[in-house]
Amino acid sequence: MSPNTQPTNPNTAAAPAPAEAAPAQPTQAAEASQAPQMQAPQMQAQPMTMPQAPQAGPPAPPAWASGKGTSKSVMAASLTALIAGAVSIFLLPYIAGAIGVISGAQAINQYRKAVKSGDQVSGGVLAMAIIGIVLGALGIVLAILVQALRFM
Figure 1 (cartoon, rainbow, N blue to C red):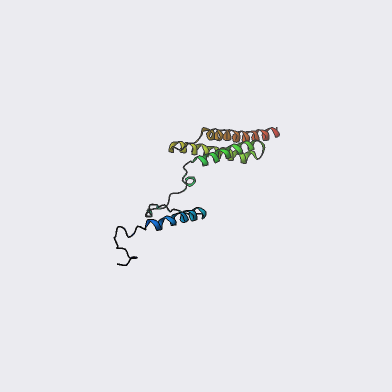
Figure 2: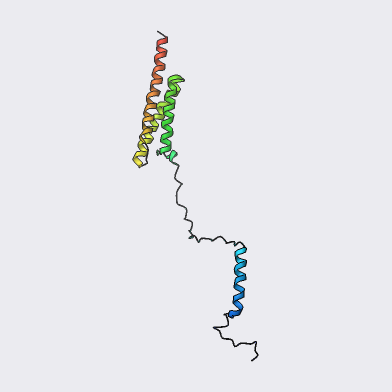
């Protein structure tokens, strides 16, 4: 055997000699501390979902088309009733009064359906609808009284 050749032992072949490893470590540590390290973004594995088979029959209509009252549609109808009822006292009493009464009745009907279906709707929308109906009817009655008093 020559002096440079060492017997190969599978357990010791992978381990470097202690004299060779010692000088290499400080230079690697110094280089690592000077260079900024970039880390690759970690991808999280998400479970795969299989697309569901399409359901038989037509799709469900939106809430406004089905007549089922939602909190937004009840609020919109009651605000329309309130504003139209208030406007009917001063301007366009027949048209605005009729809009106030009809949209107020619609808001009450939608409120009833929303409460029956378990939707959370505040009682303020019911109060606005009732006030809109009263103001709309008051605007129509006042317009009729003003016309009757003109002809006397």
